[in-house]
Image (cartoon, rainbow, N blue to C red; front, side, top):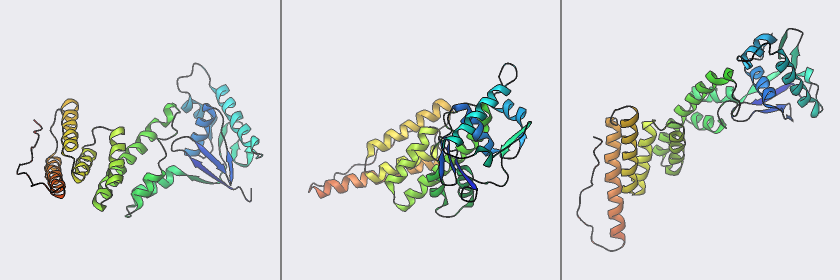
Amino acid sequence: MDTTSSLTIGLLGRIDVRAGRVPVRIGGRHAQALFGLLALHPRLRLRDTIAAELWPDADGPCAGALRQALWLVRSSFAATGLLADDWLEADQDGLGLRRDVRIELDTDRFERLALRGGDNDPERAVAIYAGDLLEGLGHECFAAERERLSDLYEDLLARVAESRLDRGDVAGARRAATELLARDPLREEAHAVLIAVYGRAGSRSQVVRQYRRLCSILRVELAVAPLPETDAAYRAAIARATVRSLDRVAELGYDRPAFAPVLVSSA
């Protein structure tokens, strides 16, 4: 235990476990769910409580499923040459992680950075988020925490997209806004970032398409129009794209045509 007295556990995305410097591959979905639950609630708790959380819809007692999952966890440690009892605290009625083991969770690091508020903290937090909590495990006991962390991540993506745009990192802003919209197409601020990105690129057609897409989504899903600030961002993007187009025409040696930007109504 002198060189392996810490557990470093990744719960964002696929579960990843290191006992000290030694990677431990937890085999089996139920074993992964058990170890993930122990990581989130490491104190010694009743086995019946843990089993009921993992398998609330099981017909009859689920102590057998817990024993099987625990055996797989122990076997996973043994396969790396480690004693599971150096990390697990277990008796006839209870199960948890040992209190003398230092536990480092990526979820804790993510949340600390997300809530700390430093200039670069949102970027660092976004980089930690490798996927939703215990991705691929459908156990209901993770649903509330998974949704909470997912909501926090999406709020961070919105902040990061706007911050990157303000810094002139157009490609980075586009990546963050696109990822946010893939997760939640109703995030209007992400649409606004993409509208601004296309305006800076000088693509009026993409500006108009993105704005129309937003109007359609808001109309169908919420029966509302875009916010005034989004309309303002759209008008600014159209104007900027128009200037860029005229500048390119001038660079080619042609006379700048006289025309006004065409705006699309959200009605």
